Length: 293
Image 1 (cartoon, rainbow, N blue to C red):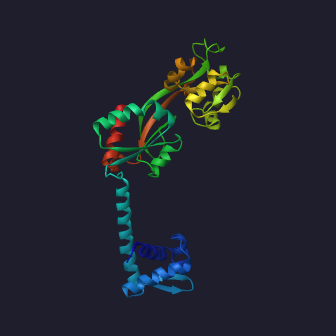
Image 2 (cartoon, rainbow, N blue to C red; image 1 turned 60 degrees about the vertical axis):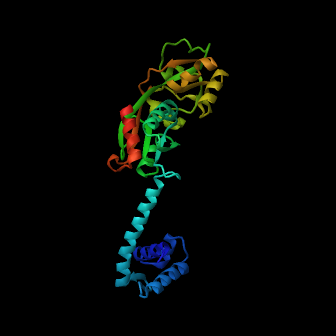
């Protein structure tokens, strides 16, 4: 007996139709029927009763169905176990974070963690904050770092870090000497986009109530350095995380202006699907990030 044959039997019993079982296993009906017939030949007994309404298991088929179901579950468990390791057999941790966290916080935290756990292997994936809790829930990653107004439902979240976004303008700009301001006070100027929520529409959902009108976004550019260089060239002003803006201020001759809006402070969270059932390596990193906060 092979696994594809057992998968077909399970599908046929659950779907009560060889045609539907074939669709589920990506086979035409004739190929599905042939696979079941071969399994019956190997075992030496009938497993399905075929009739005009579909199929149903014989007593032997029902007994084998339950065993096959358990076998396939065990195989999936083994496959999941193997995915937890890199090709050299070292435990692998899957971490998703948004761009700000990757640039601002994670380099030093990962360095410190690997000093404690030098044999760990980390797969770091960049994703939007709005997608990261879902990725954790769907088990695409072990750990997620996102920023939001509040902790996301469906995952276990702990406060991680926080930052502020500021307005970045070129030297000599009319706003360059302002000690601080609300974003609405800058609304008359052209903006370079890619905002803290990654799209203008999502950003406006957050800040809209604090503005008296829309922002004029001339260009959307995701790369931080490219955006700062465009600010220097007078193509617009930009909203950016303060720690990242600080990297380019002296280099490109820019000025940051603090924003007084409440939304300008951002809270980051580190999240997992279920801390109690995390693999050891991923659990160690999760605990480290929570403690690092």
